Each structure stands twice: as structure tokens, then as C-alpha cells.
Image (cartoon, rainbow, N blue to C red; front, side):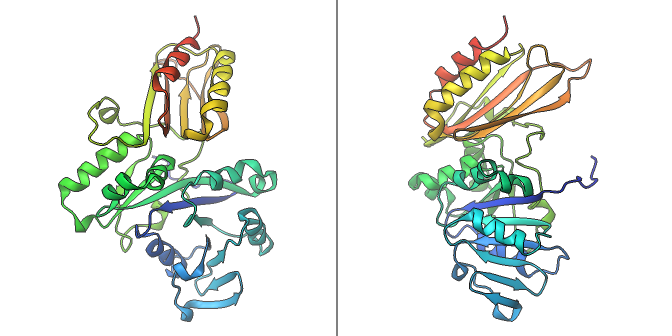
Length: 326
């Protein structure tokens, strides 16, 4: 695997979400205080929830703390765009930025910020949506709180904390449930005292050119132990799409079902294109890129995954079938 650093001018941004008590504060404190030699900025809603040791703070004003390891901690007072601009005014020389969404159950509006504001899109790159789950309490939270389900649906990567407090069987059952809800997000057990920060930040989880990897075991598993509000389904085809038909169909479906579409992503074989097309969206915002060319001996196909709340799966699949080139 090629581990060369990606050349970029944009600052990668991680949106960190997760239900109360999941372990976000532990992770954020670690980024802000560890001697990792990198310069990170952490944007939170309230400093009180972070509980930063005053001895580690160098400079402070009402909305911004500078830590003695070079990291910055600042608070959102109303407008995330304003806060991101303020960080640029501080020099903008950060290795990465973390936005913690406490109090914002739906990470969608935060993610959309990076597509709706042209200035923000010029300087920042949405790197991934990271969801932290507490293995001991997650099953009950997913049963009772639709916010917890939405956080799973939006995730590019799921970090499962406190696995030492439950049995291996409970971890496995929870993992299966999470993969049924969101098959495109890898589930990783994590102990924040041991995890490498490089495995959490700047991972390119939201990158349109990233390969769409889905675990076939979970896509063919029709057994559901839970009737979760957030569900996923996958469309696959070994026939090419008609580009005009597909764009028209998806645009129409997004107009109607966009509010309930949390995430959708696909790697597509388009008629007349030498390259694969990679697309994804959040709610009603959709974007696409040209991927790498299909290899001469490579079997061409399309894979799309949709994650949302009570979506009409049959309607989507029938419509997508109609968009295949004749």
C-alpha cells in the first residue's frame, strides 16, 4: 500500500459525533494535550464539556484556548462558518481540524457547511464523519434514540469504545447491527489510550475518489433482530448506466426523499466513459468525480449504497433498473 502523504493545500476536517458518554471527550482531550508534534484545532460547543486542565493552557480569550502542545481549542457560538474563518485569521496553519457535534444530533448540517460556503470549500476539506459508540450502552441507545441511529447512518468510520466492559458476543452482535445499518463504515474497536491519532484524523473517509468497500456478508444477511429507523440497502449491476437517465432519476428522488437520505455513495459504470464515476451525497446535496480508468481485464460494474430513514427500497431499485443503458 502506498503510504506517501497526499499533496494538498486544503485543511482536512473531521466531524466527530456520538451519543452522550461515548468517549468523545477522552478523544478530544487526548488530541489537545498529547505531545504528538502536530498542530490540530478542535472546535466544540462548550468548553465545560471538555474539562481542560488549566495548567495546559497557554493563551486564552473568550472563545479560544491555545494549548502548550501547539493545538487550538475554540468554541462555536452560533455559526460554524464564522469560527472556521476565525481559525484562518489565526494563520490557518493546522494539520487537521476536529468539529465536535455535541448538541447537534444530526451531523448533516455540519457536513453540508463544506459544500454550501464557497470560501470554506476553498480552504477546508471534509475528511470524514467519525462516530464514537459506547459498546456497553449503544444497543439500548440505538433502540431508544433516533439521534443515535442517525449518527451511525452518517458515519464514514465507527469507533467502538468500552469494549472491555462487555463480552465478545455482545461486541459481535453490536458490530453486525451497525453494519446492517451502515455497511460502508468500517467498525473499529478502540482504546483511546492506545489508538494512533493518524488512524483517526486525515483518513480520507469522505474522499470522492475513495474506493467503496462493502462487506458482502452483511449485505446478503436478511435476518434483522432490530427494526431500526435507519436502514441501508445496496444496488449492484453489471450493466452500464445511461448518464442522463440516472441524473434525472436521482435528482427527482433526492427532491422527494432528501431529508430522509442520510448518506449515499456509489462507484458507477457509465456508458461511454472510460473511467469509473464516483458520487456521494448528504441529504439533498450530491456531488461526483471521475475515478480511475477501468482496467482492460477488469470486470465493470456499479455499486450504490443508500442509508436513510424508512426509504422506499423497492421504488429506488426499480428506478435504478430503468436507468441502465439498453
